[in-house]
Amino acid sequence: MCGRFTLTVDPDELREALPGFVIPSGMTPRYNIAPSQPIAVIANNGKNQLDYYVWGLIPSWAKDPQIGNRLINARAETLTEKPSFRNAFRRRRCLILADGFYEWQAREEHRKVSKTPMYIRLKNGAPFAFAGLWEQWHSPDGSEILSCAIITTEPNEYMKAIHNRMPVILPMQSYAQWLATDEQDSTGLQGLLTAYPSEQMVAFPVSRIVNDPTTDSPECIRPLDESAIH
Image 1 (cartoon, one colour):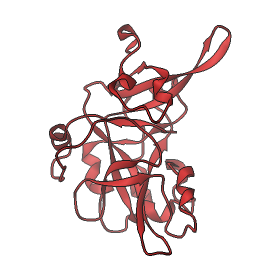
Image 2 (cartoon, rainbow, N blue to C red; image 1 turned 90 degrees about the horizontal axis):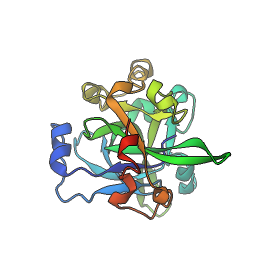
Image 3 (cartoon, helix red, strand yellow; image 1 turned 180 degrees about the vertical axis):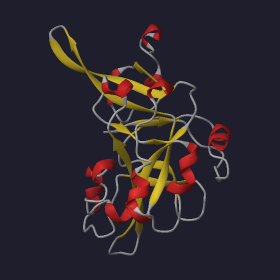
């Protein structure tokens, strides 16, 4: 599962990481992005530009948009089976922009098991893109909601010690195929949904203030102990 992430880099760094895409200026750093909030997305709608979608996918056929609260992640292994995701997998894919994410690692402390928030990012600190799906939902009053979900997969060796799932981080060379505007064969897309290389990632424990989704400050990603970065 991926239930929180960050996007703290400035627009210039995003433009460097995402050449050919329109990235607006004046973006606010986000240190604790939570479900139901607007998140930065590049969709395969032919526009090649950053927009903001609600995190929590609302299928077009849903009667109640609250279903999105339960659909923040989509398992890569079952995308072709789940009615909520299978059409979007073929037709409506997106990049969800980030520069780190959180997972809660179970640890034994004083003979009790507690969950320690871990912040995970690339070793070089560069921004990246999660593989995502998006939908357009129309309400009875004619308004619409653009929403999305993050695809997860089995963890790499590094992440196994932290959590049993991890978000799919797409390498830059996969962006064009993932954002193709025509309907894609699911078999070819499935090959993109693999775990990111362990050797390029780093993780460290951070403060439990991140447990509160209303807390959004640099303290969320500050290491508790610099020596614990591994």
